[in-house]
Amino acid sequence: MKFSDDKGSSTAEFAVLLPAVALMLSLLLCLGTLGIQQIQVQQAAGAMARELARGEDQATARSSGVRLAGDKASFSISQGGGFAKATVRKTVRIPIVGGVQIHGEASVAVE
Image 1 (cartoon, rainbow, N blue to C red):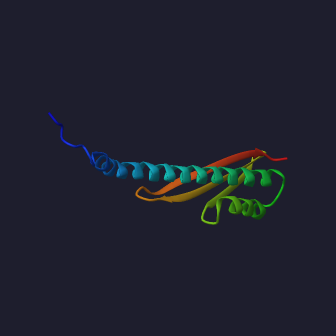
Image 2: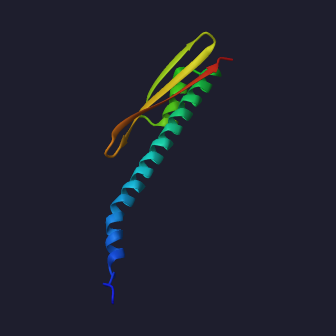
Image 3: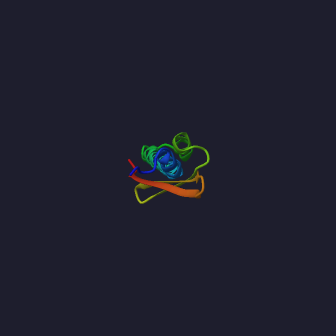
């Protein structure tokens, strides 16, 4: 007794699996992009707070934030009680999901 030929079945299985693999890779790429943006926003907040702690003016601190997080981010600075606090917010566009709001904060004692 001879079994039917399974020739081409692996091609069909691959064709069914390919969209799922492509979706997983695109999701991984989007999450990587979001992670990189989060790190940049947090670094920008830290740099701004350090500038303020050293006695620099708010314009200098803001320029450090823009250099690290980009000009599409929003920045807020507060000083008081011996501390300088910087907050950076940014919306990251992710396909299918839309805009995701990320933020970073840093507080440093003023010298």
